[in-house]
Image (cartoon, rainbow, N blue to C red; front, side, top):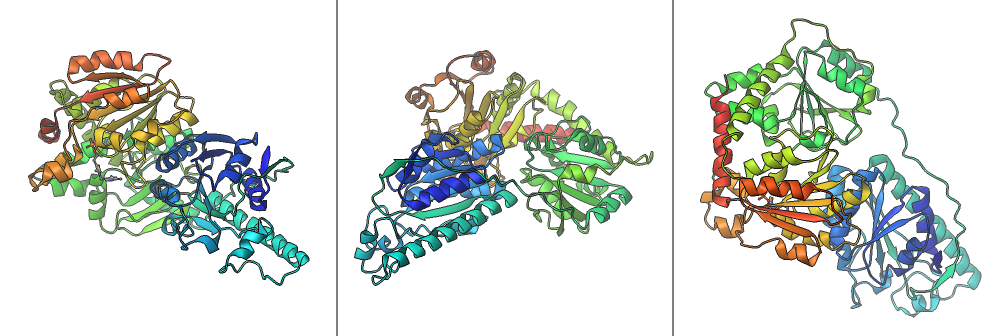
Length: 590
Ligand SMILES: Cc1ncc(C[n+]2csc(CCOP(=O)(O)OP(=O)(O)O)c2C)c(N)n1
């Protein structure tokens, strides 16, 4: 490998190897050249080149999501770093181990009028697990350091030996800082930032590779003290509501699923991103809850569905309806079971059981109480909705709602599904998803700026064919995601183009707001076609049901080309169809 003569580069590479950070996304620049060259010429690293740092950050998230490994993004100095912030905040709230490595100017060069220089240290502080700004090596280009009238790194009176001894201390401390940050990244699974001041010359290398890897593994959590008390609460409760947010596929083993599915006291409400599949679980939360709101005796029905124990698992929950319903159940005891951060989403005061959910369920048995009917109560509602849902969709005009129905039915086996914000993930929740698929969405911050880049990263990190379903604004926003050499041929992208932010039409009273089309919907007549050509993806466009049916077959067929399908839907009727759908569901409830 070509190792930089700047000592800190060696330390960084050593610790990345020790902490198992083997995938590095690199945005181009000069200040980061010493690190770039070291990483790209060392066999242990797989490196990816992406120009747009914002896209690079989300690409890294997609990789990490599929590889279940930490992934690093390396960038140069200046505003380059700031462009990674959206991905940092997503990684923070969705708990991805993202290592941001930024090359920086030496401290004495900041705020003196040098180009591509900003105050990099601490820019992401509020959304990081841990961070460090490493100390500058003083044996690298000592004369440049001494020349600066503001530098305080070297005492100009120092002897050579004193400088060398000071350098040793710097290296010892830098190693300590790197180890601290990377071990916190592993134990807490979240983003960290390593800022590295580098003095010129940046392009001096020697051929060297004598790294000895001392692998550090993710530490195991000790058994929590409150395990038995929560388990006995579980055993004593008569009506247990389990709400599952974002969860990795296979996070729950067969035993846990069986405990949850076959206990008549237990209702499981989950989302498409929970990656759970069982006929006794309820996967369409809004379909069940929203129609009740429209019924005369809604309060009575909601009270009859109240739990006495709420257990939550996983990350963020999409459904606003379940949030407001649970917030109304004052006094219910809420425990979050998992190793992710517990959130008091439901204002009930959450208690944290920090344990792998499977270790919680392993000692539990399903209740044999033949009088318990809590699960049945919810499942009956769910079955009613399913019948109404199917009969509504049999006669639905061409619209976003119908499009999602058709897409879901056409998805081939084993797809990796990526859902963009905001209406794609919300529509998706209304439909059954193929049970052999896996679903992901950037729900940490629910941003529209990185869904395609995340999907591209996921496609690279997974063996499965990948489909991203996005709205038009999110697509155009993150179109740079396609500026990427690594996209596999089995990558598929559907843009549901409703001519603007269709989600805003769905929000109550929004479309009557002054300036709605300009400032909210941001109506437009753009097409995806030119982007497809630009990035050499095969392109089809449809605007009818029949056209869609025919196009979906071709779209999913095997090919050596990546494909985009643009589906144009009528912006002014989409929201009306959705409203009629929920009205129909409530009219067909007991
Ligand atoms: C970075 C960012 N900016 C703004 C928003 C607010 N926002 C949420 S959804 C949305 C419109 C999305 O439009 P589109 O991608 O066309 O999808 P759809 O309208 O079908 O949801 C906007 C602007 C956001 N979530 N993230």
